[in-house]
Image (cartoon, rainbow, N blue to C red; front, top):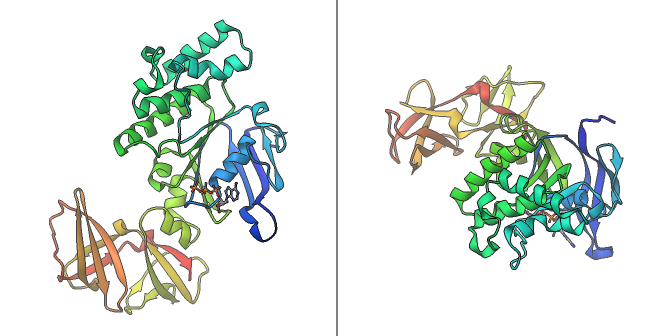
Length: 351
Ligand code: ATP
């Protein structure tokens, strides 16, 4: 057992209910989360993220498999005996208690001496930059401040692992961005292992050391944001993380021939026959008709810094290109253009 592993889930399965009403929330998930990392479980609604988090917290017991924390088997350990805390989307603060009392509540319940509780409350309120708000009631705080109180409360007992179940989804976009960097800072400063659940791929890419992409109760890929974005293992991951164009082609003489007849020198391993190319919109450039692949602009969407162009190729397939809005060349719907694809950056997936 590697002592640098905080959470080691081995072949974890979870079935809710029995008989014909049974739901398999987790198939056979194995994952090792390192101590001190910001790890994100990412996937669409219903893929099993919360179930895995609840098994780590102890609110659910896996139907099969085991969960170890720093080498100890905690599969059947009650939640309050695990050095693990959870922050939920709903802050779940006590409305009649002050910020300080909310934050110190758990420690007080554990029977910690008043001086120790006070010191811990001061320490974590400083950490979330709410020292001056200790006496306020939750309703006298903004949504972002309430979420910081919930974070402070979860951090107060110094858990080894902090679980965060979509903690930012109730906040508006600007506040969410602020809280993203706040969470990242807190994680770096405390060195606590954070396991963060979200269905927001941008949030996952910006905050995480590593991401685990889930779908239908299975873990499809685990890697750094770069790994996941640049080298998705399959079409689901490529599609879920960022925008992706998919073009069908056939491997021919070490290159891929598109439906249009054009050849692309994409990086091939041992693929043969039919393949799917995953092409990011920023890997597509538009220029005048000529040596490049001929296309016609069928849609142009101005997005401020960038413009998205939808291009129809001669075989009827479509590609989206993302081009800087201030670039010299501007195109309009109906324009005949030439499309170039950065071959080297294209991912080749099995068809
Ligand atoms: P979301 O992002 O919507 O919260 P999720 O990825 O966290 O989704 P889970 O909440 O883990 O997904 O749910 C996984 C599957 O298990 C879903 O099909 C869900 O309906 C089912 N499920 C979750 N909890 C229960 C339960 N207590 N009883 C029965 N089925 C459940």
